Length: 141
Image (cartoon, rainbow, N blue to C red; front, side, top):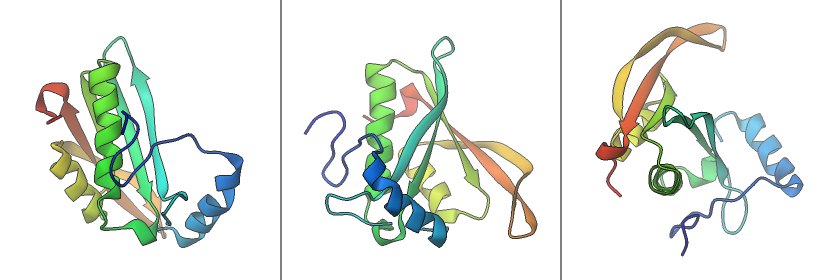
């Protein structure tokens, strides 16, 4: 095992061969698959090295739901950013209707910092997003 591998998850770059899996997931809108195949997507964005802050997002394809893959993948990413890159704060935006994602953030140690009202439009309705934050000192390595 190394910094990019856990027991269930291996973080790697997306390659062209993964396109079909992502397309199938996009058709599912809630979406997934595993073994040695693509099981979802994890990304970091809004990285600000000067302030030591970053955001991350995760989408796990449906067949991998409730198997611990999201938790393990997020922990690998957080450990890398906090330990190796020395960032100080992570943030995650969670759709208000996505209870599983909210539970994941809380299990990782994130705190709900506030709502972003009417920030999402989907299925002809407006929805809030919740902003979650985690400080390096709060993360259990």
